[in-house]
Length: 446
Image (cartoon, rainbow, N blue to C red; front, side):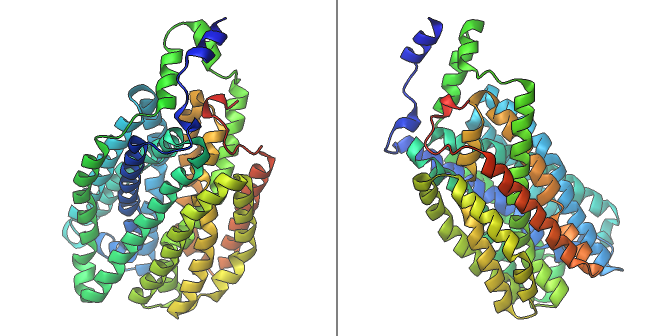
């Protein structure tokens, strides 16, 4: 009888609508702009890695300094699973909106800290220590932001527009990376190398910290997720009602789905970090490409990715989640060796390689939030996505630039390529086994 009452009295899910309400659009914009700033703060570190290594590490061994800088990049990812779990739990208690405001301010604080760190010549190794601390703070915030955003947007979206709503995150990821790359290109063109090395690289970190105030103003009027609110109301009364609202998942099934999400994310995040944030650094450090030209090539490729991402979200809402994702994994595996082999010291080679790979990546950016939300019930959505997703990003995305640099430094670049291909094929296998979930009611996920 309780089940009947619950089903009859629950508010119709906003996803069932075929139109987008003003508060949904407002929340979509606020989330997207905040995501763009978060990804700018995150990506700008990779874009300016060569300059950071010279300013905050011992310059006696340039290769060692660059590896140290990239190791710190990876260290920042270590905190992402913890941030995803911590803020994911808070998102269940205080709501998605509250978490999205707190994580944005925390990320901006980490950027301001990096901008103010004295140079290695001034305070010695303590500069590197402060850099590690700042990246840990950013990683903690980024894990929470990514988790909350990937849960929030699919939950507030109409169910027939869930992928295109979620594609906002993909646009923000590439947009933030593009903005960071644009800073790199403009500063490399306008500043003398000595100025760029001493203080110019700090400018984008100041910029990111200051923009946080504008984002906070935008996010103050976001709506709360109705799916989350209904779930809290349904589970906050009696145990009998709670058993109705919660799917009957054993610990084994929770673990199994977490592992699946982990390997799915591994195949999406590893190539993305290589081709979006690190490809220009690879071309500069391994092939001697002019920095301004390399950043310009990356800008063009990122624009292609941004343009294609919402299109792929629209396509996914029409044909389903699985076809675009499986195509992405197989195409990435097939093209990894040819695209790396194409890059030399000419900027056009980097542009072509990045454009192809980032164009393919739009298949993921346009589908990922919707696909993951539809694979996990509301009761476990932040738990699973807040742990499996950032853990995969940390282990595969965070280590990607370091491993690529290391293997190429010992003439084993092919080994990294094989590694990336294997990860993509594993991700494709996971998605191939999943059922198609396009348009499913998120409260009915079992």
